[in-house]
Image (cartoon, rainbow over all chains, first blue to last red; front, side, top):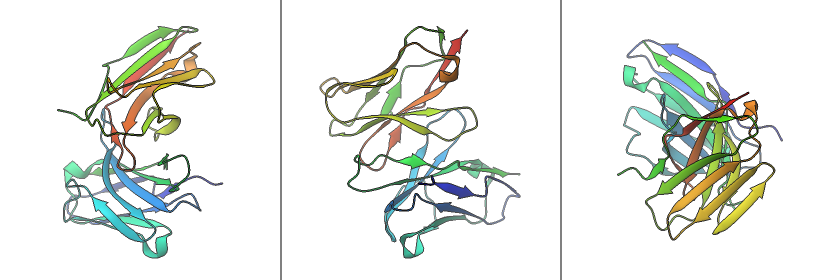
Length: 115
Length: 108
């Protein structure tokens, strides 16, 4: 199995611009999660999908953030009107419901820097 | 109150020694517990999962869970320089709650 992949690995953008990140989960995994991690902290949950349905969103996910998972395959996370506080590592993870309950495997992450 | 607390680091251990990492959690209903290893600049890597009270061993790693005390720990035996990393404790079934991590340095 190939692991979780994310693209791009690094993104530098100016404040106010929109950015979009992509995540491809492990092929048979039906659950996909987005987390955000800042320096010195553990990852913080943002949202998750089961197949194509977005089942939960954290209060951290302001209305500038939107995530989709069309057809239950890859997912995108878009941030509109970026702010300097959005600078972080954005991590995607996937899991297979029913296999080693909820073991989540992370992709390499997308490091966002907002200037 | 943070949901998941880890012992503050950094933790420095000599090569070959045992590194002991501790984690407490606040949600008494939690059923699933994980340890992730994160090298600097990389993403978290799952190294252990534990769901029942007691010990679970995998190679040089042993996870211990005590749900009554809301406590989970990780022991790394025969520590190697390659074990130098930040170890993250994560709790819950799907929406993982992470501690801030404990940074371990294994000195040769």
